[in-house]
Amino acid sequence: MTIADRIRNRRLELGLSVDDLAKRLNKNRATVYRYESNYIKSYTPDVMEALAKALETTPAYFYGYEPSDRTREINLQMFNSLEPDPQIRIVSGMMENMSDEQKEQIVAIVRAVVATQKK
Image (cartoon, rainbow, N blue to C red; front, side):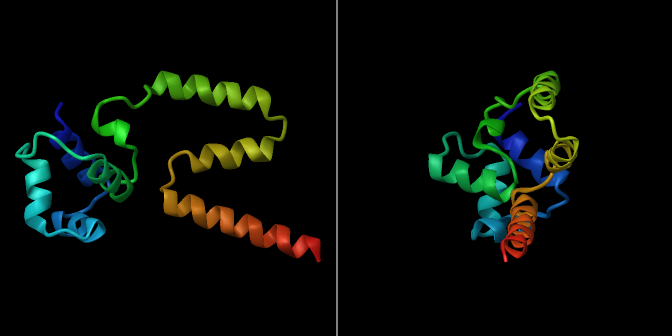
């Protein structure tokens, strides 16, 4: 699978149109089509970072270096064995599939709750 394939597949997984992705990248649709058509053979780190952010993933994903489901499972088991609070484990598990924006919203909510407790 090429980088172009991964870009297109991830865009489709998120239910984004080419125009949606172009807007997130602050580029035009022709640029997105070039990314997805394998026209571009070498991407700068800045482009990869922007694509990763826009597609809610990591630059490593585009190169095929994402951890396998088994690795994720092992990491979750390790975390669960180290974290004694079951509520934290539940929240952590729920956040695993959230976008960065959703995670930031959760952190903001928790900070607001903590701030009210300090008063």
